[in-house]
Amino acid sequence: MLSAVGPPVTVRVPAKINLHLAVGDLREDGYHDLVTVFQALSIADEVTVTRAVRDAIEPGVSVSGADGVDVSEVPADTTNLAWRAVEALARRVDREPDVRVGLHKAIPVAGGMAGGSADAAGALLAAASLWRVEMGREGLMEIAAEVGSDVAFALHGGTALGTGRGERLVPVLSRHTFHWVVAVADHGLSTPTVFGELDRLRARPEAPRRVGDVEPVLEALASGEARSLALLLGNDLQAAAVSLDPGLRRTLRGGVDAGALAGVVSGSGPTCVFLCDGQDAAVRVAAELAGAGVCRTVRVAHGPVPGARVVDGDGGSPGPPSPPRPDPGPGAYA
Ligand SMILES: C[C@@](CO)(OP(=O)(O)O)[C@H](O)COP(=O)(O)OP(=O)(O)OC[C@H]1O[C@@H](n2ccc(N)nc2=O)[C@H](O)[C@@H]1O
Ligand SMILES: Nc1ncnc2c1ncn2[C@@H]1O[C@H](COP(=O)(O)OP(=O)(O)O)[C@@H](O)[C@H]1O
Image 1 (cartoon, rainbow, N blue to C red):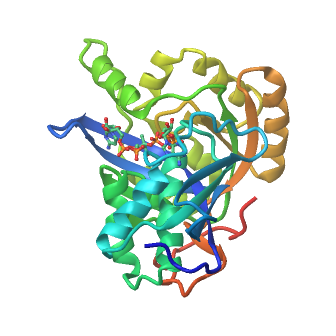
Image 2 (image 1 turned 45 degrees about the vertical axis):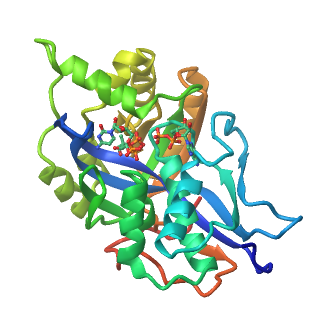
């Protein structure tokens, strides 16, 4: 049934990067166990959920892109992850998904920065707020984890250690703000294809080396020293992403040549992220990398930032989903 119109709810939800991504062997259910350190960055999508109104606002999904963001591969139908999140919540509270979900995307699509998961988390929080669902943080996190491996982190934000499929989260103490340059490719990489390529590479005698233990990464984050963290960035999926897209070698080299402390492929790629020694350094690295012709666009970002939060039209929200974070960074998105 379609309800009377009320104010829409808008949620801002950040991209993530993986500072450390250790991938275990293929499980029987087709997933891999992960040990990962997520950080939420100041590149954010906006998700607006509006009540559907008969003959005026149809239930469904609309997608638009911020400057330079190609949204042609984002489905504007029921396969969109944001719509699946709304449906999952509607089922849980036994109602119709009688809403329109508007996505304004700044997070690169299929870039390894969990843009679809961010939209799902944003839609979940916005719909819960619009419908005044009293389910608390734990309830939303549970639905988030069902929708996708990275959705729970997009609600959580900050810096967190993820285990299982990446959906079991523990907040990580991260002192100070880290400054990043993000190199966006002119194409995407499919997450399952990259995991499959890693399995293939690991079956060969010269299997790629695995990343080390996570503890030193947690210590570097607690110290807040970018130079220490730079030495420890690591991603088991990087070898697979580079194998599928050998041009990424040039991108990774280009960032370091431009003056970054270190670079790593984000998640399943092909976006590469470069840790810089402060904000001014990041701006310089970004300018030089942009001129090097090794990626489509370059962005400057900082992290950690908070997870999904209502920025407009709070319809009596169930409260912020995240627990107190040790250091959510400066709070404002760039
Ligand atoms: C690799 C990571 C690292 O943070 O990020 P992205 O590069 O996608 O941003 C994530 O694990 C991606 O999470 P997400 O994109 O939510 O994946 P899902 O939809 O749950 O899974 C898509 C497919 O990826 C593979 N997959 C995903 C997660 C996991 N722990 N093991 C897997 O093998 C499976 O083939 C699965 O069918
Ligand atoms: N809301 C969404 N935003 C982006 N992509 C989406 C969304 N919903 C479904 N998708 C599909 O998921 C794929 C992966 O997108 P995305 O989440 O941006 O990348 P990644 O998994 O690399 O972090 C896209 O190619 C697209 O087909």
